[in-house]
Every structure is written in structure tokens, then in C-alpha cells.
Amino acid sequence: MDLDVVGWLPYSFDFAPVSINAMHSEQLRSIAAMALEVGSEFLCLKSLRSGRVGSLFPENLIDPERALPEGPLGFVMVFSYSKVMETLSFLMAEAIPGMKAGLTLCGLWDGTRLVDEVKVIAVTNENPFFDEEPFLEMLQDVLKKASGDSAQTAFFAEKFGYRRASIPYETDDVTQLFITQMLFDFELEETRKIVGPMPQVESGKIDKGFF
Image (cartoon, rainbow, N blue to C red; front, side, top):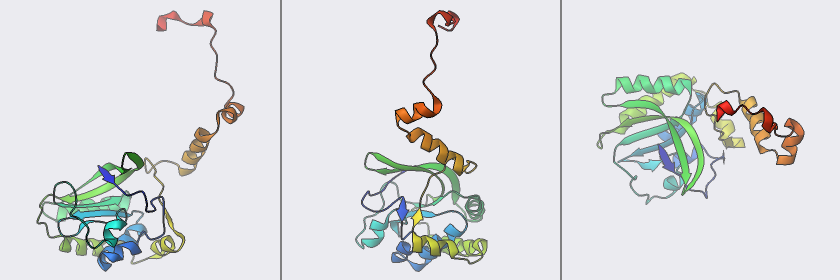
């Protein structure tokens, strides 16, 4: 799935990943806070009643005249991936008729520029008249139990800022990814000093069987 986000608001270092959602509702703020406690993040909600809101769309939360969401109507809620959120989402999808949950890769675009690409959990109901309130109440209760009613992560995310960093797969070693990225970012001369020059093959020793 693809989402078009605005470039004039912070994405990679966000100082209000939780409190911004209170401009829509206290319930959404609570869900955003507890999602952080289970290793996930509430990214966006699209529905006929709410429009398109969430941490990725603060401009819609600020603007009371926000337009209806683009594309087909229906309920869609998106969270960044965590194992706990994956389990909770599928359990709720099984408990609610017509509700489905799945994993997908989400591209975040600022016009024609790809800002980020993240693994997400999407919960959806295609019924345009789906009543989201009972589902949000259930989600709030389930997250409260899963997080132990803690808000430590959300508190520090608001106080010091929340840095979004994409990890292609949850099994990846973050340290190794950082080292690899540093090596890729070296200037050409610096790279040669570390890994040496590109290997040369003498023309007389090429096995012509490969061509």
C-alpha cells in the first residue's frame, strides 16, 4: 500500500507522535500511546466518519475542514509492525464479522519522492457504513491489557522526540545494518582504503565457457 504524506511536517523525528492524536479524540491518543508500549505505532485511520487521521496525517487533525479520504470508502487502520500487535490484530479480526487484518509493505510518498518504506499491519472492513466505535473500544481495552496500562515509552517519545527508523525485517540486527549503511556511505577514496581496489582479472585467464 502507498500513503501520500506532506513534507513540511516532521516524519523521521517527531515530537508529538501521541499527543497530536488527541486533537481528534482522547480515545485515539490512548490507542497511540499504548501501541508504542507494545512495540508498534499507530500510523493512520481512514473511515467515512473520521476521514483520514493519525500520526502520519497531523495536518488533517489540525484542519477542522479536512476532506473525506481518497479512494474507496471503508474502514482502514494501519500500525507499524510488532509481534504483539500482529497477534492482537488477528485475534480481533477473527472476533468481528467482516473484519480482516494482514501484513503489507507501506510506501510513504511526498509527491514523487519516496520518504520511507515500512512493514505494517493493516486492519480493514470494506463496509462503508462500518461502525468503528465498538472496534476502537475493543482495541483500547485489548491494548491496555497487553501493555499493562503503562505509558513510559509514550512519555519519553513525547519528551525527547520519537525517531522513526525502518528495519526491513524484524529479525535484522540493527547494529549490523548501521555498519553496512556506514560502509555504503563512504566516499569512493575512503572505500578503496578500507576494502582495497576492485579486483582485476587478466584477460588471458578468462574462461570463455562463461560467454
